[in-house]
Amino acid sequence: MSRLLELSLAALACLCACGPPPASATQDVEAEAQRYASAVCGARSSCSCEDDGRFESQEACESEYFTLFVAAVEDGMSLDLACLDKLVESEAMTCAAWPWEEFNYGECRVLSRKRGVGEPCAWHSKLQPAYVNDCAEGLLCHTGACVEEITFELEVGAPCEQGVGQPCVWGAYCGADDLCHLRGALGEPCTDFFGCGTEQYCAGYGSTGVGTCTMRRAFGELCDPRDWIPCEPVVPDSIWKGCRRSGEEYRCADEIPGICYLTFPLAH
Image: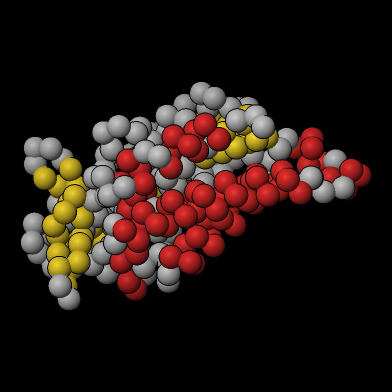
């Protein structure tokens, strides 16, 4: 069997006339989906990522990853097994700190299409740490369409794409509504993980959906693992500290495992 399992749009269009794909092909995709789901969710459990509140259990985690993975292939995305092999066997599935030293996120595409400039695309963040891209090689997905490059100086009120760097002008952020908004000042209320100024975070947003712009916590201070990067980095290395369990409490301590960083529930 080829190392590349590809279900093209043409093949999918033929389903009504030709009937469902062979059972073996479906089973192959489901087996790979389960392998990926088990690897990601097992790593999340081992590294205590579940404290971020994204899933109620490892079983719930595996169910969501499996469903999203199979749905993407059934919708016409190509599955690169060599890339998947590399990912599940890499430090990405360990508690290695972010950023990883050996595996470069995005160096290959586990699931992909070949859509051209201007064609529709989506940001598949819920399938991370796998790099998933609707666009052809060399193109990026931004504000729902494939583009050659992204403008990183979008004004307040302009459409943007969460997860693509920092596309808005200095002092603004890309909100969950895919629009640029002004960042809040220290002590002001916030309704987005990215809604506060430099060296601040939206404290409480991960738990309640509404938070307050607060300075990041120092090493050893109390924190909430459901907040996005509540701990200050280690200077001069600029490696983010994680909010980790310490007895019955959570404190800023260990470096953030890459698997926790890339699977954090940024959409509240």
